[in-house]
Image 1: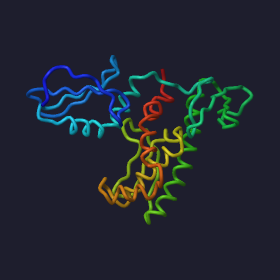
Image 2: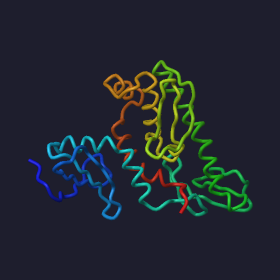
Image 3: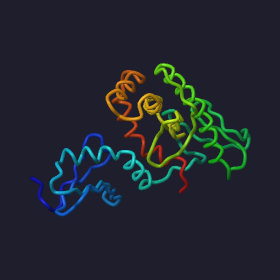
Image 4: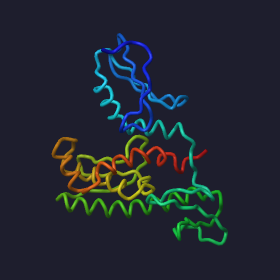
Length: 238
């Protein structure tokens, strides 16, 4: 039986921060908020809600949770001297007046010249060019395996979603995935390509997603939950 009052914050598998579940007498629905002071999730629910059901609902809000974490943690702007991941590999941003304006990846460094004031914009632009090239190719590869075709592939930067697929076959992916390790990026790509055949998350969808991605699907999902909050704050201004 639930009891009213304060509950202990517990670290649950699948959630990046501890969660505190509080059954409230008279509550009509579940509510979730992130307390950045304590670094915990606060979940209130009706008294008759089981702990298992409450946690399952919270797990379905992972993308929203990641967005809240990204806003609560310090921004990491693209600036000279910053170390950022590019395809999961730590890369030093280097500015020099002797370098070309267009950033280039060389030996673990992203080297760039041109006016210092436009450095962040140029770094983001080159990352987006790499993102659309890499992910368009991966979409085509997975789609061929699935016996489907995307009508378009574009980039976005939604606060709560890493990708989407419309009923018209348009796939949209976060450019920030180019910062993530390849298996994380490919998981999201495989997920959205699977939606070309199944616009739901039923058994057929999950089977196709697993077939497209191959071994390590659960590990890739877990890795995205781990690195997601940082990816969302990279390149943000102070």
